Image (cartoon, rainbow over all chains, first blue to last red; front, side, top):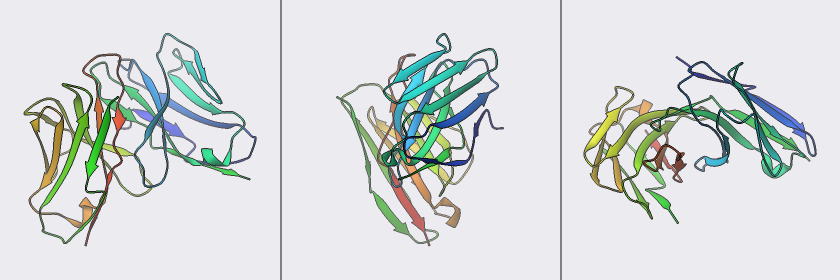
Length: 111
Length: 113
C-alpha cells in the first residue's frame, strides 16, 4: 500500500528553469512532511520540511507548497542548476517518527 | 553536532554467507534508529526501527535481523544471504521527540553474488 504517491518519476529541466515535484497522501495522521535530496551513492539529505499548519515554506531556491484539504504537497526548485541534478524524495511522518516515503523523482538539469 | 557512521561502505558477499552491517551515532543520546534498504533506482524500504536498547520492530518479514546492543549502535545481520539482499543499506536516526526528523548515514553498498 503506497501511502505517499510521488510524481513525476523523472524530469528534465533546463538550467534556470523551474522543477516541480508533486506528492499526495491519504493518511491524515501524518504531521510532518520533509523532502530529501539524494546524490548517487550517497545517503538522502534533508532538504526542506513543512508542517500541515503552514501553506508554504521557502528556503533559498527551494519552496514547499502544502494543500491540507487536498492532501497534496509539492517541491518547487527555482532557477534550477546542474548541481541540483539528483533524486528527490518526499515523505510524510507519523507522530512517533516513522517516515513514509514517495517513490522518488530523478531530476536532471541540462546546461 | 550529531554524526552517523556506517561500515563497511561497500561489501561483496557470496550467497549463503552471513552479514553484519554496523551503524553508530555520535552526539546524541537515546535516538530512534532505523534501517532502510534501497534497490537500484528505487525508493526507500523501511526494514527495522528501534526506540531503545533491545527494542526492535520489524517492518518486512525476511531473512534479515537487527539488534541494538548499545544506545547508539544499530546492527543489521543475516545468517545466510540471498541474491535478493543486494542493495544499498541506509541507517538513519531521529531524536526521541516529536519535532525531529530522520537523518541518514552514508550507506553500505551490498552486492551478493
